[in-house]
Length: 259
Ligand code: SAH
Image (tube, helix red, strand yellow):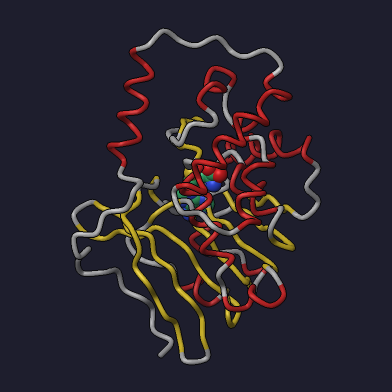
């Protein structure tokens, strides 16, 4: 039954915790208040702020210890513009330029946890992973701590370069940054134990399913009708592709070509 999964006809009224309205309300509230001063030496002080973020993630249902550990290690404030550093550990997406955003921590943690649930990752850990939509490179840095190799592809040259600059000081030898159209996947690194997309399309590109290893898992947002998106999990099994539709999400659109 190797058929291409279609998108769900309806959402069954289920709505995830990451409704976009909640995120923008947080930002609007912040905007009204006087801007907080940038803490001095945030690089050192951020550990406590990050630990609180991890506590909130655990309280909200993230249970995989390796995911919580990775989220506690990667300094999210290094992946946003200086003016946004104070919001780096809030559970909100933030602009990274060119109309794109850094995903909110709860979504990064959730998708990463789902990826770790891939059948082929259970015994031997997560092998090669493909991320579609590098953006500023934050999710890739989190994945680098959990997967053997991370291939991350971005279609916007300026963001690809920004991610390279942000990631360079972290010296993550297992992260491979690619400038290209992730709608085609990245055949050179296939097969992947996990594929994760940070951008949502109308349908799943066939290449993503083709490039998934047996026992591998794909986690991606997908159009769910009425302008909404849902989180989709696709497992490649000997019996074919098995898909599960999870909560509503809000990701930037998946676009084709390089710009
Ligand atoms: N992974 C990022 C989120 C980036 S937002 C994080 O860690 O927060 C999603 C990104 O997907 C955007 O930068 C957008 O340019 C990119 N994108 C959209 N369509 C794409 C495609 N076909 N190939 C590669 N990247 C794509």
